[in-house]
Image (cartoon, rainbow, N blue to C red; front, side, top):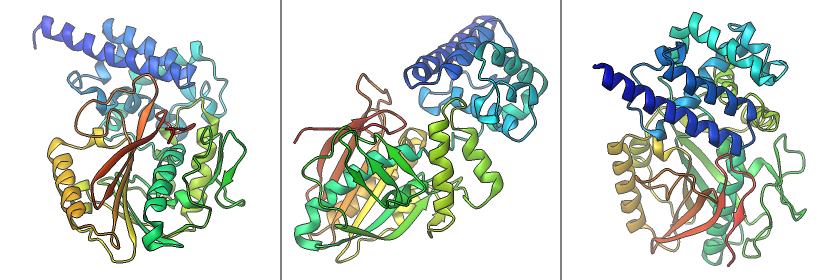
Length: 371
């Protein structure tokens, strides 16, 4: 690599870090915003961040390299391997001092850079529980569509692409509280999404209108919520100064240890290849902020299989696809835009595609489209 190419690679890395820094600031994480801005400067100065990220100069924005970096560093802090950095992370009982956290992070990357580099190989295992608010709303819209044929209680089979630990396959077991004060879900749920949406659409069916009869998720790196190591990995990707998200995760982990979920270590294509529609039930394929991580061939195979299933759908064996993805969730743009990510519902037979709402990347609050 020439010096010119090296400079260009550093600039690309710095641009990635600064872009994520702005996103973290927008999404309520001043600590991560500060750390990533300083990390961008360090890359251009040829410091330890540049050395740790070497070889990732051409990673696409959708690969979320800055979040991999901070997730790997927080994993070391949570596991006791980075006490200096942990002293400044609220997630580990630290003081939350962003100015002091930066030199501690830089020192960690200088002394334990190879351990952090190893963590860059895995896509962020966020499994953000807040996204369930968006997925549930799209699901309720699909239930309302199918209730005249399958009701009064619609049996729902859930299948999730990129499920991580499968926490959002438990979306019917969470408690949702809208800004309008209305609630959905069990009152005793360990997960409560306060301010889940701005208002509940009048088109949604009454509570109790559906029952989840099957929960299956696929992920090449599927995690077991009952495993201490896997739970630690999930915690490491929750931004260190956002305790509300950490509390949601802890509640969902508790729930996941009680409710059976079929988690499979398979990619999107294999998960959907084995899926067949079932008479008398609504089959729902859901995914959230995962399409960008799929290899092109995997995405294309998954789209083909969804089209095949859609062509086979009938009014008594319908199919729905619900998603919260950057851009339009297809193999295209992954920008957040000005209003958030679209909450999308496609239903078969017919293949009708609707954007039913918009939500920030972490899911809450959802703004539903007026209908």
